[in-house]
Length: 281
Ligand SMILES: CC(C)(COP(=O)(O)OP(=O)(O)OC[C@H]1O[C@@H](n2cnc3c(N)ncnc32)[C@H](O)[C@@H]1OP(=O)(O)O)[C@@H](O)C(=O)NCCC(=O)NCCS
Image (tube, rainbow, N blue to C red; front, top):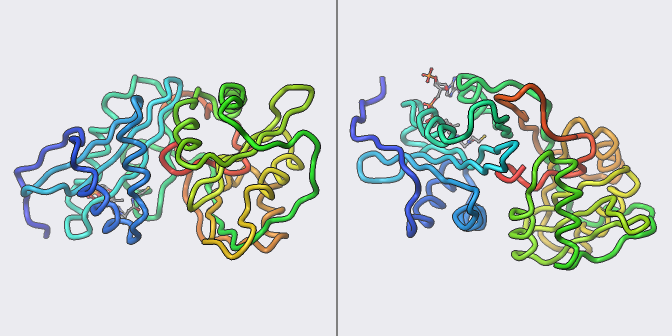
């Protein structure tokens, strides 16, 4: 049986705790790449990072990004030495408490996370398929594709809102500031797709048709011997999954895309060629 720990408190992360949180998440997930996500979330006015403190240290964390009509739960992790004591569940409950009743909350669950979310009332929507591009992902060019500039962001955010189901303008602007590399496709002046590149991944990529999505993905794919780029594709988008497999992009794993609250999923996952990541949706 686990030892009882009774000096447990759940609270918002304080300024200055970013490095401790990053180390906690690195230990929980077994890889060290959380610093950009923690910095990004800490700076977003509509994001809140909750931490669980016990025995004088951070032991668990969970973040909610609240987009208004939908919220996303991410970066959920518990210190490996302290798992199985209810910390993950408690910090998730604290993170979810401020979300307005009835608001759909979405997440992408790992194998260890899924039982926690099931107990919190989340149910399966589809899967989020994680693949890894190690080189170019060629596709036939389509007309209307151009490099994305800061001036495109309002039109891109408006297009994104129609597919994602909520206004993510702040999140998209943050990603673009971190790496101002993206592509947009316009037809008759109207945005019909866009994509962004992050240091370790391609996404979001959203488009009206698979032909446009594939062309955007090609433009964002690694040109040469760069570090591999992760791509997370909703299982609802079979056209993109077939395309990536045909181009030799390997599938690494699948997460369970889950929802709690609301009477339907707010987004159109079949038009998402790649999600942004597991905390921005
Ligand atoms: C997922 C994670 C945060 C869970 O943290 P935790 O503190 O061990 O979870 P808890 O102890 O709060 O467990 C919550 C509930 O889920 C249940 N549960 C946890 N792991 C389980 C498992 N492998 N199988 C079945 N049930 C499980 C617990 O019994 C508990 O139920 P209860 O509240 O009715 O007793 C932790 O395993 C972790 O950090 N994993 C690695 C990172 C990761 O994958 N995070 C999730 C990203 S989606």
